[in-house]
Image (cartoon, rainbow, N blue to C red; front, side, top):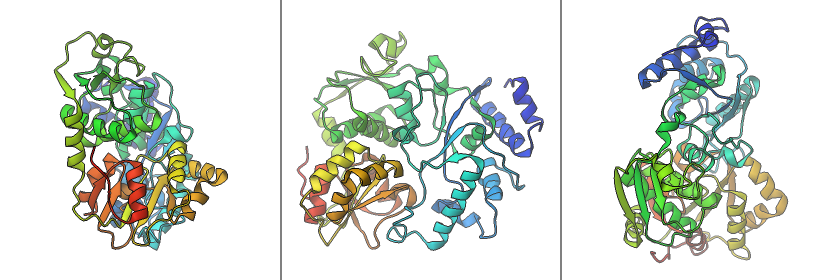
Length: 426
């Protein structure tokens, strides 16, 4: 892999040990991927530094965050002095809500680690947006911009709906990109790799957010990690529908980019989306495929629901408005809990316009910074959950052992009020 003179200088240690280790990591990573060079980036979204559940065991109370960052994010046993980041760098989802962490089952020690991490992020210049949807809170990339982002649902949105250039990065490559402003030039950074491989013929009037999520879940299962192009879609998906379609396809199959002919920026025509090549496979999506995906995601038998989760990916302002409207004048059952997740910046807006007052006045909770699947947060004793998220419905049975119902946001709010799942399958 070829390095430019500035990159070689970083690898030689001209900018200190931490930057040297970061460049060494990216050089080895790029060579393993078969990349021929690095590409500059000024937009990095990385993971939590040492405070998520699977990292707690390697952190002692006496460890400095520099030592933790060095070990977990730069693969260095030697504690390094971490300089301020070179790029616009954003921190993704956290381990718990700072106001509701006790209710979520987050320990006091973990909350202390979260606060310690926050101070460290501020010190080195990482923006704590604490959300899986950075594009909802100010980080809106431009067409053709090279990104170094973690979080599969954010990457598929940026690639597909915006036309930015990104692969799903790990904690180490994203951290290294923050310190070097570089990322390996491979995968979806390369124009010829961005063409569709599979043709999806949509033979169903997909309209609701739930239907977009189910279609995404089906598409991910059939194309795996390849890139689909959809034809037959009547209406361009809005933000909430595109979020759920992309998140579902990334969950069931690892899709990082899709095209919709005449709607997404790199698919003005089917020929353009396919790059002039024939599709590897043509697949139909109709009513039966939608029903099959729905049945697959519903693994619960007990209609008594004790936990309802909304907001994965994190809820938009529109989704908060919808939920507040559905809860107006109603009350969540005393036998269940309704948690809605949104970015902290959007909760501040919800506070101002009254959505939070309506939601919490109905006995629900508007939470930020985390989610059940990643933070492993849920009400104590919960056994049956309902959600409007294909991603959560896919992960919660395995990660938290919860029997799961999947449906529309209306289905979920009605279940929260009744304490029972009463939805009719599509």
